[in-house]
Every structure is written in structure tokens, then in C-alpha cells.
Image (cartoon, rainbow, N blue to C red; front, side, top):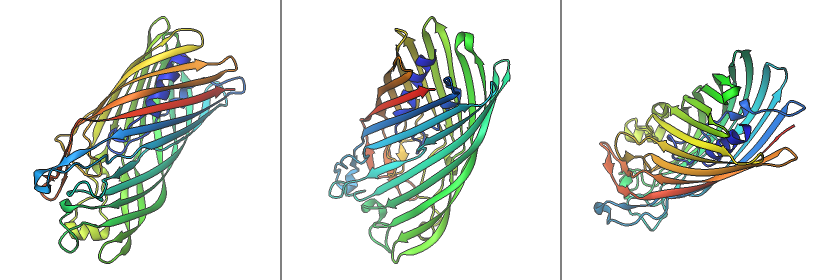
Length: 380
């Protein structure tokens, strides 16, 4: 069942859309912990994903009803995993991923409400996780997660009330790269005879302190604190018939605690936050089938729950999504496994808002994205 599982996991990990539960991108996948190693007790994998979203909308009539143009830029995802089996019971894994991200830019000259608004968030994380098998199918895992984040945000357009001091149009904040440490803990139960595995993993929140520069009448340097969300992943798989596997996952991420309010912005808005992301769930389920000793395929569905209403931050102008993906995996006689797939995502309608109380400034409907994923793995 290894080939079937890998086909599904590579697809789910490599083609995740940026809007999946807030700023999630990699979904912090830890599947490498459970991979089979080769003769030397080693396993390595490299994954690549390319995501091509199409997200546009129309200003409300108060701003002339103009089209925004595509505001979501294409982006790439890279992941690396390595596992070493030291004893029959103990193994350790190294995982490199890009857990969070944003690439939003409203073209100038299009939207009068939000033209010039931009958000760029980059992140990298290295996880070092040990796993101990206790017998009777039970195991525990845990370790450290070293996370680096930087960001740059600009507010533009009439929705922000014009230039200072009347409004926030033209406000820019840069968050210098900051690295902090969190932890990962979890447990799993397996029954190899039916390819059953249920794994629960908790990711701690991580507190960052950023050196900040706000370019806003006049420029000010300071520090600000931001907490990235605690999260829980539940991953499962089970054989349901000969050469057939069902797999899926549930992820919860606590984005209510993710607040960004640098000093000048805080004073200008009475304590508001540049981020406005709801705590939420994402779900996926799929089926894999082995067609030959070397080739298997998978089909999966994904759903990211929408928020309580359609009002969202202009920096993340979507509200949930539904996706369908197909994937395949081929194992060469050398032991190298190549897997990948394509995912089509239907993005939920949303209304970017500003102000207090929240006022819709545009309407974003009928948007979508395409994701391509590829993974190469080798057990040796």
C-alpha cells in the first residue's frame, strides 16, 4: 500500500492553495514520519508545487464598479523530507516546508477602491521530529520546529480613506525576517494488515518579534509581536479492498490569535489589526488504487470551510473553497518513486471590506485556481 499512500500524500501536500485555512500553504504535512526506509534505514523526498490562482472582482458602485484585475499572483511551493530509522522502534525525520504565505497585489489603474494594495508574506520552517513505536500498533512523535517569516504590506485605494492624515492610503509596513522556535507532538495507531493508520499531530503557536518599519507620515521604526497559529492535523488511511486505499485529513488552525498591529497603524486605527482571519477547518478525502506493481492513481476532494460571512480582508479576498484532484505514482525498478497530480480549486465568493464597522468595498465571485504537484522519493 506504500505506493498508493504516497500518490495521495504528494498531491495533497504539493498543490495546496494559499487560501486554505487563512495563510496556510503546506498544511504542515508530516507524512514522511511513516514512510518505509530502505536497506540503510534511510528515505528522502523532494516535492514541488506550482499554484496559479485567478482571483478578481468588481468595486462597489460607490467606487465606480470597476474591475480589480487578477489580484492573486502565481507562486511555487518546495518541500524536502528525510527520515532515518535508527532502531526497530526509533526513527527521526527532518522536514523543510513553507507553511504560510501571501502574494496579493491589486493592479494600479484598475480598482479605484483598492488599487495599489499589496501583501507579500514568505516563510520557511525546519522540523526535527523523532518517532517511537511502542508496540501493538501505537507510536508517539514529537520535536522542534524552527520557523522564519518576513512580510511587506501596502494599503492603496480610496477604500482606505485617502492620504494621511485623513486616511491610510499609501501606508506601508515591512516586517524584517525573524526566526523563532515552536514544537510538534503527536501519536498514531497502525494496523499494517489492512493498511490502517490514524495520526494526530499538534503544532504549537510560535511567537515572533519583528523589527518593523512603517513608511507613513513620517517613517517610523519599532518592534511588533505576531503569533502564528496553533494547529491540529488528523490524518487517516485504510485499505478497503484489494489494492484500494481510502485516505483523508482534517486540519484546524487557530487564526483568531494572528493579529498584526504595528505602532503607527495601531494609533491611527484605535487598535485595529491588519489581519482579520477566522479560526477554521479544512477537510480532504480521497481514494487510491494500485493498477500494476509499479503504477497507482488517486482521486481526492477537498473542502475549506467558509467564514461566518462574506466580509474579508482585502489582503485575502477569498472565503473557503472546494477542490478536486487527480494524481498518480510510478515506482521504477531502481526504487525511485515519481508521483504528482493536478488540482482544480473553486474559490468561495467574498467581499473585501475596510472601515469600522466593516463596509464591503468590492465583490469577488466565480474565481478559481489550478495547482500542479510533483514529488520524487527514494528509500535506500
